[in-house]
Length: 113
Length: 111
Picture (cartoon, each protein chain N blue to C red):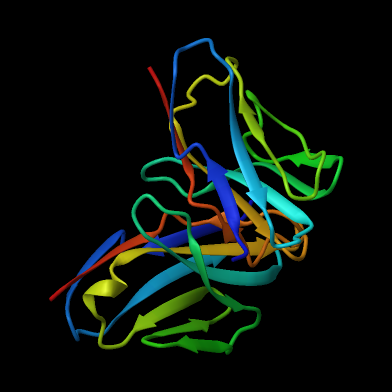
């Protein structure tokens, strides 16, 4: 079955550590996105990528980094520079690069201890 | 700056009790309005895309409508399995690749 796979589902990190969240899709979509979801807030865009080897910052990119070396993969690194990293992280993809009809993964919940 | 406001924040219905969720938006030029359903601890699931005022889309017990200022998600004779958070998002002409999401409406349908 086609879809988006995020791992790990739950992750605990100590302050000062970097952590990488995995996102893999087999939908053959060109565009991929990372969103952050916090209680009581709408989803906020961290980074997006329209094609391999190209990506752009979203609204809250500070403290995060990404890479897009393969069409299927768009990993997100939460660095120690991110001041409030505890959140639910969602990866998504879309066939077209207009950010509309998004297919989401199951999410990764990061908790900083 | 694009803005999306969803109301109510939470809605509790009895099974079979129809109602509507509201999504009010302010955008520079609407390229699309989207509805998603999100179950607890899961990623959102796409429901509908609406592009122009007057457009309607239906799926089972759900019907989405669009005006120039707002969208409604009508739920007819809901069942407990319709319980979820419903998210509204807009894509404006300002950026091709960014959706602005509302905070969502948490719907609970009691049997």
